Image (cartoon, rainbow, N blue to C red; front, side, top):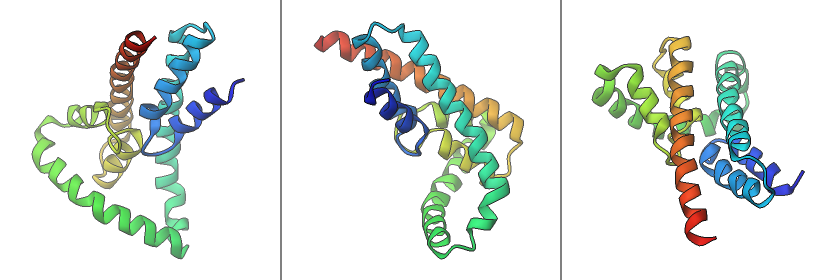
Length: 159
């Protein structure tokens, strides 16, 4: 396995970069090694969706334990304070759209709008878990398709 594919997988499961960082690298790897793009695309999407379950497990079961660690508590409180303003604005603006708003939030292929942030929004607003998982997964798929087309256009433009 090439290091670029490993990097793509790591970027896919990390917050901030997620599939927005991992998918383009994986697609380039696939095109260079004659691997079907649908296979690589499916792998990256699946990994990003699986991260949703890890995040919710962590927030539900391990977060309170980690809050006893001073570094984690400071980091989380700092991050949440910054994020809370965005969540409040998001909730006021899009609460009538319900879970469609959560899907659209995750589907926007920008940093800090992926599965990690979608899970945090859902957790902080205490939204229905099953509906949130479906909404966030749908957003991941939409973002993946947007990034796939963007990456393929970029590759075709320069190669």
